[in-house]
Length: 62
Image (cartoon, rainbow, N blue to C red; front, side, top):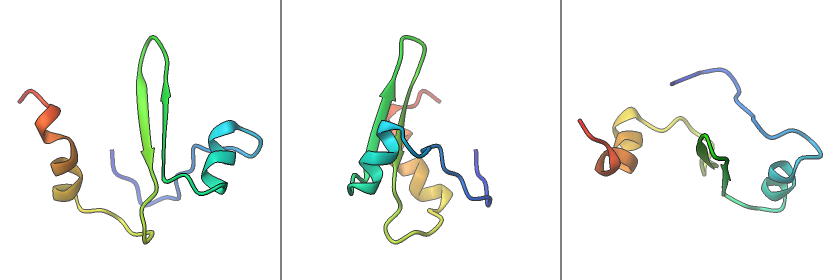
């Protein structure tokens, strides 16, 4: 999903928020139902769809 709105899943006081503020560029969260990997864009800019697809296409079954 693509959004032009500010997206921030980290909330003050949460571990992931503290990790990001300490300089972590990637964080992973996992449960028995799903997992997610969050990556900070450096510099903060919208990555292209082609670049995003290139990061994961080798893991997809099309």
